Length: 97
Image (cartoon, rainbow, N blue to C red):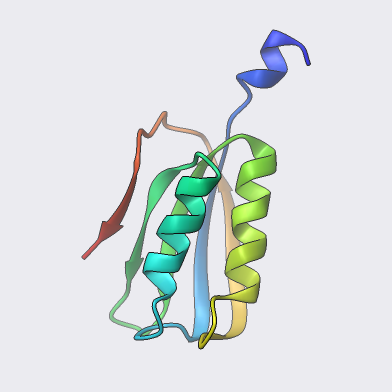
């Protein structure tokens, strides 16, 4: 792998719709992001969705989004909106709110 490839970063925002609050979705997402070495955040929204940012290698970001699309245990995912954004160099992963 070339040095430029190892430094390539991707950033994606997601909004998960369905039964996603009160089912450990945020905590499961935080743990998966940590396992993948991603930075970003995840939060519940007043609309009943879960929103988050993943930032890191393109492969790790895609793996995290695959996790979100499936959802943890009791979650029921209806749809996931995804938006590519410019990486900001985030450090660490947080539960917000």
